[in-house]
Image 1 (spheres, rainbow, N blue to C red):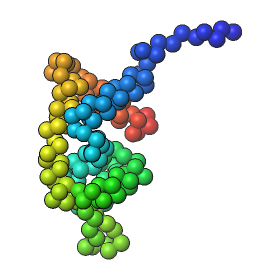
Image 2 (cartoon, one colour):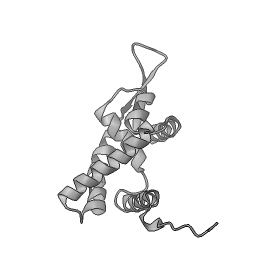
Image 3 (cartoon, rainbow, N blue to C red):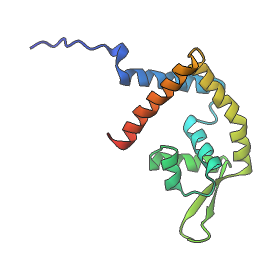
Length: 147
């Protein structure tokens, strides 16, 4: 039995995704900064689009597991970027929304997030950008659906 099975790490999808994530993290830190992570931005953006949702819905819309979302909500609340308010129809339930500071922070960060995208994809044609996004979405969809 041979132990030297051929494997091309440089072209392995998982390896490339990990490397791309490393590049994204590095570009994010240099353009946006380290005060707000991309996952925290995702939460702010979801709450901008859907104010007054519960944490379970937020975790689903931001594609975050519930414990990660809980941690991010706690950190953003501590920073004064989001607020928790009781549901008027169900006093046991908490709803989330951006604070004024959160709205301002999101508005200030959006152009920087767009710049991150330009740095990452700037050398690609418009068609390549669309194809890249479509293919990444397909990989992410499969991961979320387990299929």
